[in-house]
Length: 121
Image 1 (cartoon, one colour):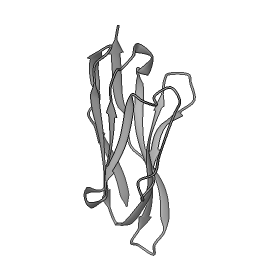
Image 2 (cartoon, one colour):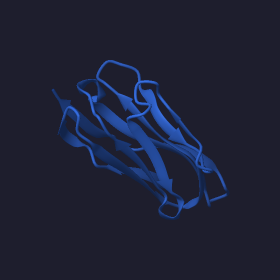
Image 3 (cartoon, helix red, strand yellow):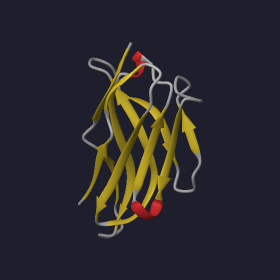
Image 4 (cartoon, helix red, strand yellow):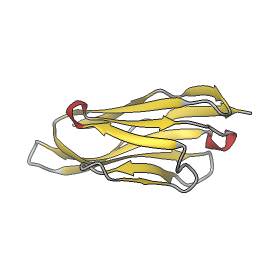
């Protein structure tokens, strides 16, 4: 079994910063891409940022220049540093990872439980 646990969400004023963390645990052999998505009620989940195992990154246009994704492979952890936050960044943020299990080397796409980010104006 593998799982992702997020932390770091909360309430912040517009212009402020938050840092989200997501730790993978379980029977992990390796982790391929890791990413952050967000979803507002009644809307589709959308990609915020993704980082490959080699460190290549990709961002949604709406967050480019304000958000930074990074990972610590030794700790099986991915981070999302969010600066210059805007009210429209208010969403539930979900961590996602493609994890290769050391049980028969099966690959799983895993989601975290979500963490709420609220940006007040």
